[in-house]
Amino acid sequence: MGVRDLLAGAKIDLRRLLSAWRTIVFSRQTDEYSVQDRWHPGSPGAKLAFWAWSILGVVLIGVVYPFAALGFWTRYVGRQIDRIVAGLGVLVIIAAMAVLWGGLTALAWDRLPTTGFRAVLAASVVATASVGLSWVFARYGSRRLTLVFAYPFAVAAIFVPPVTAALFSPAIGAGLLSESELFAEWLLNNVVIGGLSTTIRQQFELAGLAFIGMWFGFAVPVGWALALLVSLANLIRPRTRRNPQQ
Image 1 (tube, rainbow, N blue to C red):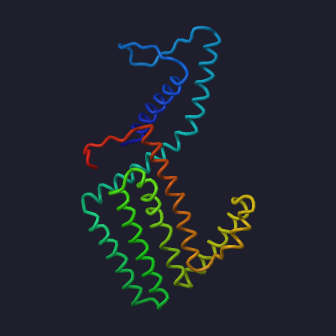
Image 2 (cartoon, rainbow, N blue to C red):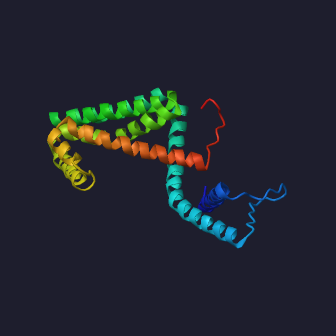
Image 3 (cartoon, helix red, strand yellow):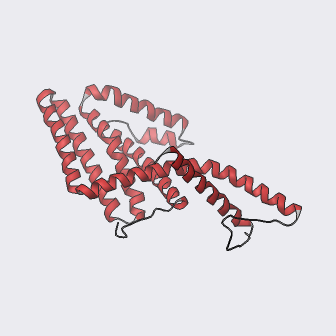
């Protein structure tokens, strides 16, 4: 699919969205021989209202559609991964990940100190488990379970393993954990509102497993955001399925 095809698809989407937006308030002229949407406001006041409503729709659609485009891309990547998993089998994929991380663990056993070996081993377990859970929720859960659990676990498979490794390796932790502390401090000072920041500082200490909890906590809203983008993409451009059992 080239750039021209992408632009053509976006043009069709934008026209359909604007047409649906206009239909919310204004009735459309029905003509079985016409392939275009036609509105004919009668009075000057109706024409003014029609164009004001259309301009508002253009603005809103212009704001929303880039997020839908990101949802299209996320959905496309998810479909490609699903095809690979369907072709090879989930057990093969998980086994391949286990072999890959197992090889890295064996390499760490031979070349790294005990702390480095533990870091790679912990990261391998977390990554493999996150990928497996993500697939289980996506394959056997409902659409709601897929949105609520599958996407967060997929993001956790990216976010959590490096942090897990950092807990067992001072060399990795010196950089990653210190940056995590700075990031958490920035969030508490600039994002968290009201007295919640003070409560978090008093009740929680960012150390040890709390780093894993912190980054898994980030993976959840990021996964939900991706799920919402895909839902928006499905709403604007419904996905066609050739195999109804998929």
